[in-house]
Image (cartoon, rainbow, N blue to C red; front, top):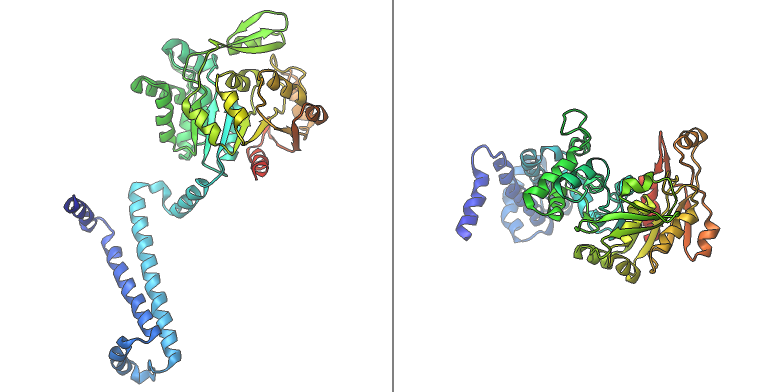
Length: 432
């Protein structure tokens, strides 16, 4: 075994490896630095080498008998030796990196530092689904890589719904968005995952990432493993877990007493939602999810669709109990705008009330509420789609026993949504 290891190490000396000269320069640097230490401390070696040194430099009038010269030349040799070692190691790393990971050329130190630093960050569990959750993850991954995203699997529309019906797999859409949000891969790779086909009879409407997760599921026979393998491809910071790996349907009891089934049908019913149910109701979470919640420093619910993205996770048996028994900071991130067919006319307090009514256990203590109203042009644009600004009525939230945290948490471009950096900053400040 030792011989095999030695033979493997000797391969570094093969022709064309482009590291031999730098590897040989390292012992030279060590020797020069050692000579500097010898000169500096004035050991017996100086007594032997001193006369030879003095003969060589006699014509310049320099002698090691002078303490100042000892200091200058000793420190000089040490500095030169360390410089040679540094340059050698740097060139060895650059030579290896240029072959193994060319994209990291010139920024390897930054990547190593960043990953080491982030690996020591706070343990944060985020629970929800939809674009709101993925937006927040983009901000949180700048502070820590100890992130676990627990994502709902009740989406039955679009590409996810088609794959669920045609292949019998769990819907991958929300999970794909979270994977991309946490990705450390090159921009082209993340763009590829989000690419949606517009041509081709069988591919129209499908995103490449959804199809890849579907292929991974068929190859491995396991949706959970497919998500893990896809995570490795994207080199994500943290983990993404489905809230359950059992097939489940979302149901809503509407205010008129009727029952709507399926996420897409619930929002299209046109009747206010009274309560949300899972069918079947005895759905179990992954053991990893419960363990992550138990170890978390912070648990964040939302942002996202209250009834169709966040509450379904709290209906999975074991998750609300694990959250309630955790000593972590528990935060609910309230939406910025109302959602047609789901939260029409809702204020911030209405969002909180809807969350509380679906769990006998207290799932959060803090409520992050945006108080900055978008500019009028954007409000008018959203009003055309029957979406309105969520009123930050924090007094009502306090009366319900929660602690509101007000702030400017939105990004105003051509859409109104939470700003990843502002949101992450607010969450991290609460943790500390």
